[in-house]
Length: 321
Image (cartoon, rainbow, N blue to C red):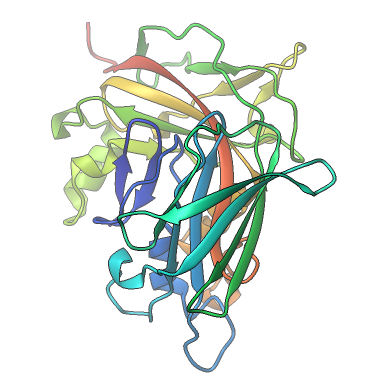
């Protein structure tokens, strides 16, 4: 069972025991996919090891940590410490419009094996700009490249009610500031973070999951996320602002919750949408399931970006007075 780990600024969906990365978005951990698909993703007669890149660029925050590891054989219990790679040379470039490097940021190894940190802690990631990561190794032949174009910064601009009745006919709406497009369409993921995730406060759907699944606990759902929401599921207003109906399935606990709106780039959208098929979100037969989409040259993984904003409200039981 996947556990959701949440820091003050970013949430990454991971297996128990895998570390956090700073930011505001939940994405599904690559570690899980690598265990499931390290052999199946590639047509081959024997196991072949791949380098795995994991980094999430967050608008208006410092440059991200970079996690480098290798795939493990199918059936092997995953441990980032066992898979982590040392000896990497990592740099991130802020590109000019023509593709040349405007600024280069060098990285150094951290105290944790396989984790690399930017030497410049002062740079804040710019919206609507392209960042390129370049990686080679002192002790391996692989050379990795990937690019992400960051979304525009977003803001939730409507006044949120202090209390929202769960599954009320008047569904909660979020109005998001007008955005300058950096991709074909805006894509959002929303997640909800419970302040006090107690089992007795679970909403009915999640309460059923906890009661029926032996390896599932209430704490597993204290940070829940929606599937990606694109232009077919929100309204663009005359002034360019965007109105989104917040889906009730994103609410796991009654009580005080933080609601996060995340605008994601194409790389994250590709990974999330393809992993939904891998993890059962499709009626395709096993032989027809497509590979995960990684957008990484020379390896697999994710170098993606997003922008976020947060509001807070209280989700009230319908029967509460």
